[in-house]
Length: 131
Image (cartoon, rainbow, N blue to C red; front, side, top):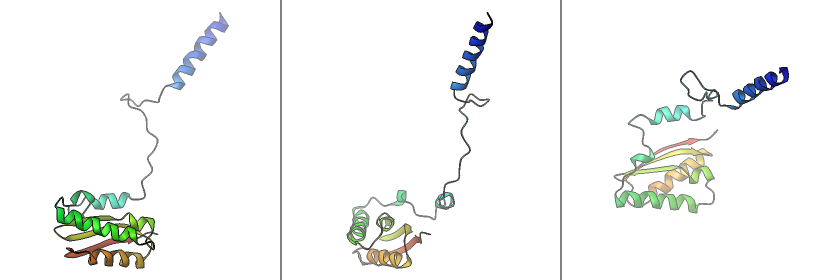
C-alpha cells in the first residue's frame, strides 16, 4: 500500500511539473522580457512627424522614384548590406531615407544617389551610422 501511495504522489508531481506555469488568470507565465536594442527608435517612430514605410505614397511617380533609388543603391558594390536595406519613403517627390549605414561616407553616398534620381524634389537623409 505504501508503494502504491508513493507512486500516486510521484505521478501527481510529474504531471504537475509538466504543465505550463500559469498565472492567477490562467495565462502562461512569460519569462522577463529583455528590451530590444531599438526600443527607443520604436517609440520615436510612433510620432506622426516621423516617416515610416507605411507612409510611402502609392502614386506611380513616387513608387518609381523609390524603385529607382533602390536600384541605384543595390547596383553599388561599395554599399554595405545595411545600406542596401535602408528605408526609402517617397511622398510627392520628397524622399526620406532611414536606417543604419556603416559610415558617414556611405550615408552621404546614398543621399547623393537619391538626389540624382529624376523626380526627386528633396531628400531628408535620416540615415544613422551604426555603432
